[in-house]
Image 1 (cartoon, protein in one colour):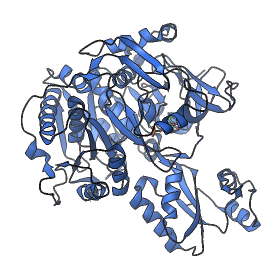
Image 2 (cartoon, protein in one colour):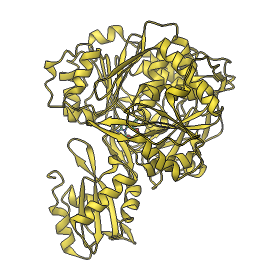
Image 3 (tube, protein in one colour):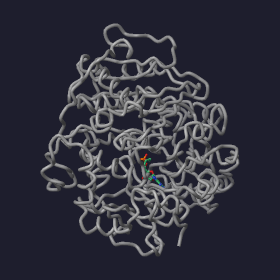
Length: 623
Ligand code: WT7
């Protein structure tokens, strides 16, 4: 069952032989090592996997490698080929060939070294999607500094937390950036973030928006002033040297710093770029995610550049100023691989796709949140014209790269399913006791074998690493935090998170963090945050607030505080004042709220029957 991949696609695909699955399961070491050998190593690895300290798994032990070298130097003689094509929201464009990228990265690496950045230093990058952000990532990788990218939409407080938690010593930022036609002063936010922490020695500022910003003498430097010419020898790094830290929300209030390796991570994103996204050197891939999310790192930079493809990068809102700008961009640059989130697809679903020439698209990928059959079918029929397979890729910040997906030339596509575990991976769906569930029964999604892109650790927090991922089923079974089921043919369907994490527009937010911030508003006595389904965003945050002063004014205060402390992505879609929250042994029973609001089921655990009526009357879709 399912839709068969289009013939024209199969003929040209990187992977066409179904035996890849059996080969990988018979010899998974060889499967990964074959991909690893396609990259350039300064010294080969001695051991593919060291699992003696499980759940700390180390891949390609003894190998020496540099991610920047593999993404840039290896392709630098392509002087006539674009590595990066960039379009700003204001219409500006820039192109960097592989050779120009090589030059720029070398020059900026030298500038960073001069500022005192060393192998092992941690360098925060608080930047919008502009070419210098990619240059900054690669320059850090070149000299062995670990980059810590902070999404530009995060508030100063959220950025400050990340600077401090990662113990970053340097910060690269921009004066400002464009979003929906407005310029945000990013430097000011950066300064406020630095103030909260005090460990930042030097700041580099890229001029993007051309606005006036304050520069602190001796601490702050303009990118264009310190970046001269020069060659910088790439550091010869251990395979398990930390390439970057990416913060993500977990089931506690504080975000976790997920640390990724150099060698294993690069092998994983390189291999999956070829297997799943079918990338080839002559592709132009547009990964719509911001660089500040793992998707931007893995399939907007390291994966495509390691393959030698061209990356298309866009700065602002994909539906601004025209709702259908996404299609203008695809047409203008001849995008061949379009990798996006279902939320964006739902936003532009009403665009007339036949007004654009989208014939260059040969593969579409989605990621980050469940996609419903209608949106999937629209992508397949109206955007890809049934010529391009649509792969639904499942993975997480913690896994570094794809884990479950269709192989585009091999797996029949079932709209909304994520397909099967990729070759080389072993996943299962278990009940709470650890037994595999039957087809169509919902259980916990786990990964039963480590893989090269698996995070090294949680920065500075070994307890959480073991507790969240390796406790439920022991030290060798990775607990994903997602629930899922399998159909009779083994195709997997993701149901959602089992913890207090919510997916909004493909971004992870912590409900606990939102509750804590809301509690900071003095009129709030109690608050519970849950996710409720939304037609466009997948989910929105609904806050149920107990307050003596239930008023619009208090609601506004809560929203403002959440936007200020976390960022716009965590903004509640709905705030409801209630006299009481359903509780059992002192804890709020979120399930009862959800069932009342969404399922219209009478909630238990309430002393006041009027509250039950109130919750059931809420119409989540009519906001
Ligand atoms: C969570 C991870 C992976 C990069 C972007 C998000 C959800 C991810 C899918 C998918 C349904 C998905 C899961 C997962 N998720 N991909 N194809 N279908 N849900 O990375 O922020 O670390 O979030 O996103 O719930 O646990 P992330």
